[in-house]
Image (cartoon, rainbow, N blue to C red; front, side):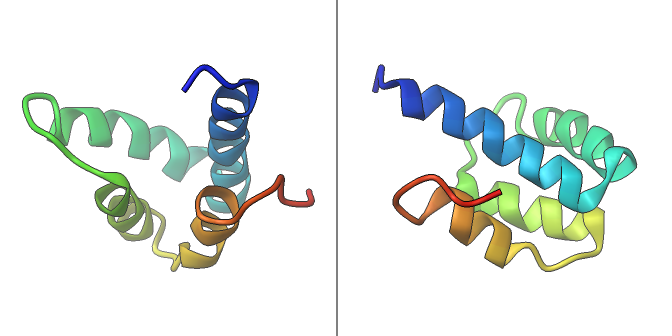
Length: 75
């Protein structure tokens, strides 16, 4: 839980997402996410679906590489 990789990899995954979908979609995604789930629970799958919807892209490959595969992805 306190591993260096836990914090670094999350930030790197968000940056990879930003680069893939662009600033406009990325900066729409984050406040939409927090607004939708302000008083509720959500999980990674919910975030992926919202990112797909807002970006108009299928982002499964990006999330598979950054969230569900061991080791640091190549940049």
